[in-house]
Amino acid sequence: MEALTPCQNPFNCVFFNKEFTNPDEVFNQLIKIAENIPRTKVLKKTNNYWHGVCRSKIFRFPDDLQILKIGKKIQIKSASRYGGSDLGMNGRRVGDLLLLFEKLNG
Image (cartoon, rainbow, N blue to C red):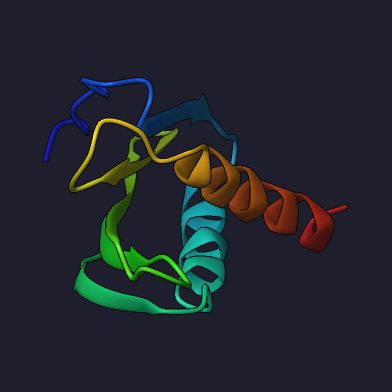
């Protein structure tokens, strides 16, 4: 996989792209955090790509969460499978993922 596809709808998707000096370590830590998100099922896991489905607490709507390592870059994408708006859920999910990562690496 060369890169994650950009978000088509900014109201139900969020995309993060950043270069790191230690991408292998960052990728592995992000996966550990993502796999502990409640109601998350891992669909695919390779040495540079992770894909899971996260379900909302009340209605159990499925959102795809993807993490990709390309060279020194890490890309994260969280997108709703259905509906035109996620009421900010995907943005909160990626924000929480990155916040936990920062806390671990303070």
